[in-house]
Amino acid sequence: MTPTTLSQARSRRRAVAASAALCALTLAVTGCSGTTKDSVKEDGPAKAGDAKANPDAPLKKGLKIAFLPKQINNPYEKIVDDAGIAAAADFGATGKEVGPSTANASSQVSYINTLIQQKQDAILIAANDPNAVCGPLKQAMKQDIKVVAYDSDTAKDCRQLFINQASSEEIGRSQVRNIAKQLGNKGEIAILSATQNATNQNTWIKFMKDELTKPAYKDMKLVKVAYGDDDDQKSFQETQGLLKAYPNLKGIISPTTVGIAAAARYIGDSSYKGKVVLNGLGTPNQMRKYIENGTLEQFSLWNPKELGYLGAYAAAALASGQITGAEGEKFKAGDLGEYTVGKDGEIILGPPTVFDEKNIGDFDF
Image (cartoon, rainbow, N blue to C red; front, top):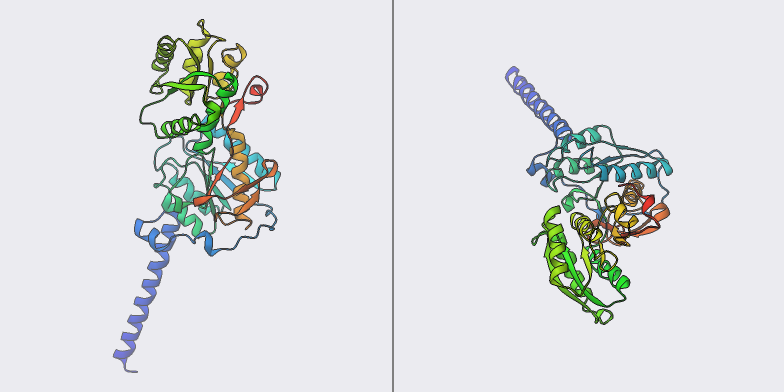
């Protein structure tokens, strides 16, 4: 080999080495700080169907599970996360909660990157934004860290599972079933909703109306859907308006925590107390006094402790290979029993919890 040829060969080797170093550096950077849109498309996570579940596999011991709420000081999500951390300890895992103090769209990204560096076995996230967290979550899944969304979903391809509180259909239909039982399936009822364009409210109301078409409710009539705009004072006034406009009104369903509290405040200080049945969705701490003073007998909401408990077991089942996130897979969630993975990796906690004087003292949220 001539000196010139030798020099050219050395130059080519140096160029190849530099290119390899640059690629390695690029991989290191994207692994710590997220990815670009293009790199996510090229390096997306493996689909659930690419792996094989072993439903008989035992839960692994020593798993590291992290809960990432919308914001660290959210009282509701604190209940969810604490329950999940306690559940993790029950099956020999280590759980923790980390998160931002503000619920901005991208505020969770840096925490995901840190959890990747810590080599967590599973990340459970209540997403502030369904897409802003996708880049780092996909990187986590590429490194075999399982990702479970809970309470607030991510985009479907950015996690393996989503733990949903309850199905929209069950929430809507159960509201009618509950108040119908109290009324003996007879009488005029009204709905006090939030805003006219609230997606979840309108979905629930659609199922309420459909439930009322069943023969069992032939003696019940929905006379009005009112909107309090999730404003306390307006909801209070709308309650007053409903009761004056419909003197034969026997019940009000308010599927919004603001609305049901405002309606209870009005009814509790009026001659309608004990005469008009109020039901809907509320929180125990918000509605406790109205249960205790007899303004209403019951209301509903999902149990946040059970949501966290189920999330922990679902994450452990993923990390242990019992499930992959494919539709139809089953796993056991401790005391809650067996659950089945639904379409798009969704797992529904179950029917909303009904709170009354017998159990309301057991809850603090």
